[in-house]
Amino acid sequence: MQTILGSGGSIGHELARNLKEYTSDIRLVSRNPKKVNESDELMAADLLSAANINQAVKGSSIVYVTIGFKYNLKVWQQNWPSFMSNVIKACTEHNCKLVFLDNIYMYNKEDLDGMDEETPYNPSSKKGLIRKEVANMILEGIKDGKLTALIARSADFYGPTIPENSVLAETVFKTLSQGKKANWMSSLKFKHSFTYTPDAAKATAILGNTDDAYNQVWHLPTASDPFTGKEWIDEIARELNVTPKIQVAPIFLIRIMGIFSPIMRELAEMMYQYDRDYVFDGSKFEKRFNFKPTSYLEGIKEIVRIDYNK
Image 1 (cartoon, one colour):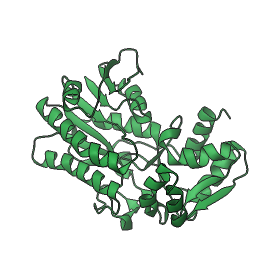
Image 2 (cartoon, helix red, strand yellow):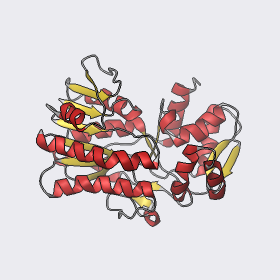
Image 3 (cartoon, helix red, strand yellow):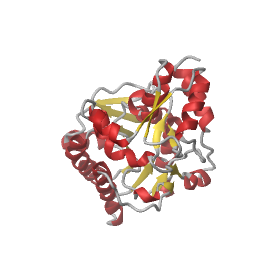
Image 4 (tube, one colour):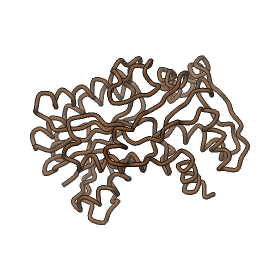
């Protein structure tokens, strides 16, 4: 049995589809799980409950954590450490492997240009401190020999049918398609990597089903040489066949907007990711598994085709 905790999101859905290549015994766990494959086992659960987590993990050989809590600092502080502690306890008790889908918030902000698996942890945000704590819980479990696990880390996501989880979808694809100005934070001149969700899901399934991939960190495959903010907007506008109108939001404006908008208030501390080159290196995975990530132009075309019917 391979189990996905937080199966309702875009990655969980894609992951379930990809796991079918390896097993017909897939358990999808969320508040309101829905089948992806006909043979999927559904388990409705409150994943903030230790008892529910233990029941969901029981009988599993591999557990994938793809859950995303509300993008709110207080929610993260309350939920992430206790959730991960319960997952690790359950995986240890039931002797199953753990695959954790992670982000890059814990990395030193001065090392974002060429991030790889050796980039030092030195978070400059409160959310980053939480992600560092959670990642270290897994790494310490591995070091102690109590846990078999891996961390699959991604850059910011983009991909079809995920507007609620993608800043790029919300601020560029959606706004341009509605005839509005694209929004970009801080500066248009810096490069910014995005990981294509179908690639991320496929790679996570590969890692989970490769014995020697465990007990280490992996960057998920991500196209190299990313666009600058200006290039992202220009290419998306070209594919949508609209004029690339742009509005840049500097940090002071984000903070003002945060007075009225909860999401902008939460994004303010992450602005450092847009005032420098943000380049994600997935070459370790790509070389090990001979995997070529989807190019940015191909990804844009597919998103526009699926989500905007063009």
